[in-house]
Length: 128
Image: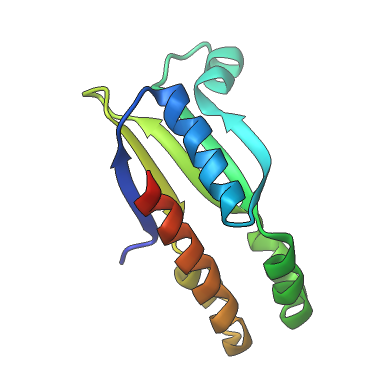
């Protein structure tokens, strides 16, 4: 089962992160949180890890509509987009597949919202 939409992106890691954030904003998403996994593991565990960022993306209008239909949907928000460096130095951008995520609710009222989020994430990934 595929639960992400992903691509390999050209450019340096930091450049890809910035472009990803910019493309998310162009699709109406704000980045509510930006977790630097590499820095966190270094600080908390004294462990080295590849460059890896988790961007918590949220489109306020779509989130509002979703919460109107399913108040517990907040447990699944924001939608995560990750940017990480492969062992060969290439950079991958991967976004959660909203239909898979929202599918666990069993609420068919959310299908159109998850389709819209999925379309927007696909455009972000394609633009990179």
